[in-house]
Length: 592
Image (cartoon, rainbow, N blue to C red; front, side, top):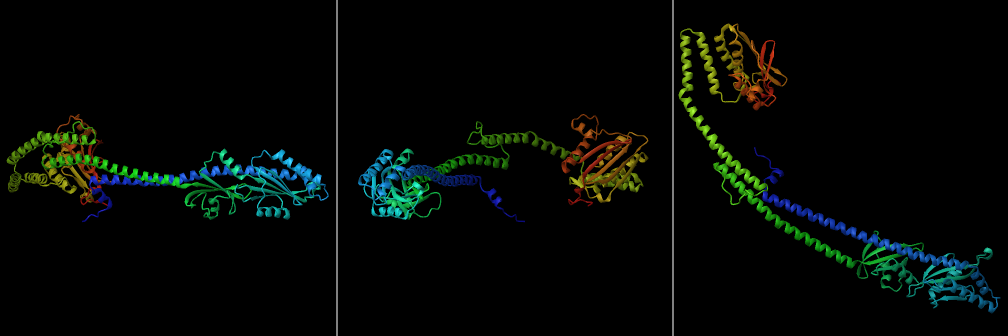
C-alpha cells in the first residue's frame, strides 16, 4: 500500500544541511521584514514628532501674537472711550469752535498719545479721523495709507460699524491696522464722532515672539485672512499659499515653491486668521533617505555576513556529524571497533565531542561484551545442543514411546499405554509448538495428558476436577503456564499427604480479565513468594523458579497488571493466572 507523502514528511526528509540553511534564511528574512516595518513605523513616528513639536511651537507663537494683538485691541477701546478724546473730538467736529480751540484740541490729542503710547514697541502710528475729515496723526511713520485702505476706513466710518476691525495695510513692512469707530459716550448718544486707526508693526511682533521662544529661523511663518496674505505681504511664498492642497490631516508634506515643505496650520485667536508654518522638508527627507539606504545596506551586509558565517559553522558541524554517520555505518556492517577519526574528540567538550566519545565507548564496550559473553555463550550452547542431539533424538524418543505403547496394548497393560500416550503428547507439544502464546484449549490438552499420568500414579489419593467456560477456549496464554502450576500443587499436597487430596482447575471470566484458578487441599502458599524469589529470600526448592518465570512471561506479554496471584482460604492454597480477555486469537474479545 502506497503511503501518502505529506508536507511534514517532505520537510522531515530534507537533508540537515538544507534545514540549517532554511532556518537561517527564515531568520534573516524575518529580521529584515521586521527591521523594514520598524523603520517605517519609526519614520511615521518621526513625522508625528515633528508635527507635535511644530504644532506646539506654532500654537504658543500664535497665542503670544494673539495676546499682543489683544493688547492693541484693548488699547483702541480705551482710546475710543477716553473722556479727553471724546471732548476734543467734539470740539474739533463743532463748526462753531474757534480756531484756537481747534488747534488746542489737536495738540491735546497728540500729547495724550505721546504720554500714553509712545513706549509701545508695536504701535507704529495712531491716527484719528474726525467726522469733518480732520486727521490727527501720531507715530514714527505717518505716511498716508493707500487708497484702498482709506476707502475701507471711510466705509467703516460711514457705515457706523461697531467693534474692532483688523485690516492689512498692504505695505511692504507687513503692518496691519486696528480700526474702531469712536462713538460719543456722553448721554449715551453713541453718535459716530470719529475713526481710530492704530497701525501695528506685525513684523516686529512676530520677530519678537519667535525670538522669545527660540524658534529656528529655518521655519517660515505666514498669516492669512482667508486666501489673502497678511504676513509677510511681499514674500513670494506667501502669494502661493492659496495654492496649497486641502488639509488631509494634522500636517502635510507638499511640493511648495519647488521644495518639499512640512506644513502645519493653527488658528490665530478670534481674528479668524490662520498661522501657517512651513518647514523645509528636503533636508529632513534627504537625511531620512540616507538613513534608509544606510539601514538597508547594513541589513544586507549583516545578512550576507550571517549567511557566510553560518555556512562555515554548519559545514563544520555537518563534517563531524558525517564522520559519526560513517562510524555508525562501519560498525553496522562489520561490528568492528570504530575507526579512529582524523579529528581527536577526547578533549572536545561540546555535544559533538560527547556524541563521538559516547559512541566510541559504546562500540568498544559492545565488541568487548560480544567477545567475552555472546561468542562464548554461543559456543557453549552450541556444544550443549550437539550433545543433547546425540543423546536424545526426538524422533528416536517418539518412536521408542510408540513401541512401548504398542507393546502395552498387546499385553493388555492399559495404564502403561495411557501413560505412554500422555507422555508422548506432552513431548510433542513442548518440542513441536514454536509459538510463545497458545490458546487455552491447547494448554488444557497438555493438562489432560499430564493429569492422566498423575492419576494413574496416585490412584485414589488424587481427586482432580476441571470446570472451563467454553467461550474462553480461544483466549491466548503463554505456552506451558498451567501444567507447572498443577505439578506444583501435586508436589506440595498429594505427595506429602498419605490420605490424598483434591486439585481443582477452573477457567472463568472476571470483567475484562480471564482467570485460570488452580486450588489444592493440604498445603499453604506464601502470598509474597514472588517478591522473595526476586530477592532470593525464599527457601523453596524446585518449581519456585518456574513460578517466577511464568509470572515474568505473562507480564512481558500482557502488561504488569496481569500475572500470578496467590491466596490461602479455608485450607486451600489458590494460585490464579490472570490474562486479558482481549488476548483471544485474532486480537478481538472472545466473549463480546
